[in-house]
Length: 460
Image (cartoon, rainbow, N blue to C red):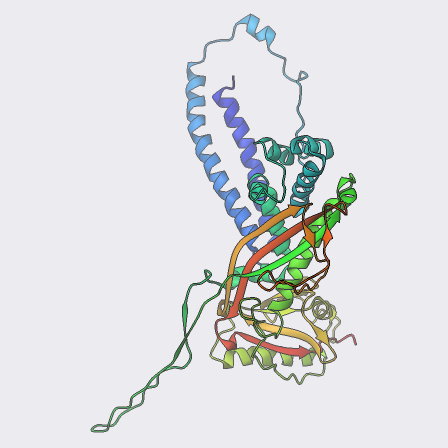
């Protein structure tokens, strides 16, 4: 049986590991010159809470360990002989500390679930066979028996989320890390779905009034808005032969395809100028905003003048640049990071190909921001003037019994059905994975976004 002193030593070792992990999370954001994203903030706070709890336990048990030491009886010679000498050989158990890339854990859960259903085997045995070093994955399938998924089992996705909780959160983290919406979500104004918000459209006005003169009346206007939950969905079909291959590539394929499709839809709409489609798609944040005409010639000085014009446009709308940030294509960030001044030094040293800072404000990049013959879209966004509704969860389903219309733009609707050619997953030896995310966004006021088509390429 462990002594209090041994337990204190074990807790201190665990605390050291937690502290190192917490510092690593913080150091990543420091090295990249940005604030922590939502996933990193949650991980940091969780580690901080665990360290606090460990400190409390260490304090309590240390007191008991001191009491035991004070009242300990001398060790007999026989006991000493039975105790291994200092420096002697002791059995050491090496614990696997494999660190997976974000999203791989979720992909492994999905793959094991699919194979368990296909082969009618215990998922824990499959997990142990394919990933013997992934202790967390094996444990997630040994907590409780889970029935195989089928078209009549409506609780399968819920069981997946419950048992694969850690990996499910890992998948969400991977999704957000590569989405511009995920990168900036902590800078936007959170709004629960279906919560009415009053927006003042005009302001009241007062006037100086002379003695005996009539006092003026005034009025102002309000509009009411709310964010309804809108859905982004994607289905990816994979053959059972692919899932049966003992290759990491199969895991990465499932992860990447699901994440890429959802990212493209969210980011593509968010940065667009498209109008909203009632009950289906939110408006892009550039919708209804007239682009600013830039006059710079693309040189370093021209870029500075263009950026200053955009900053002044935001301030001229009675908003402050505090809390504002830039959103631009990765190609523009690359051009800015490679630009040099007359002395050969970096002209914009804060900019990196992945973001950084520009004109003192944070930069976020995305490959979904459009570029055409007019130039690349560069946006200056006042984050706290953008509403974001996001439940933060992803719903996942899997079936080999479904029939699908193999089309990236299906037009069928269950309320107005029409004939369409479908492909049976069962008949073609395939498995379909469905992912859905509920999210919505809207400008709190039109002046929240300043954008322009920029030709910022001093190297051209």
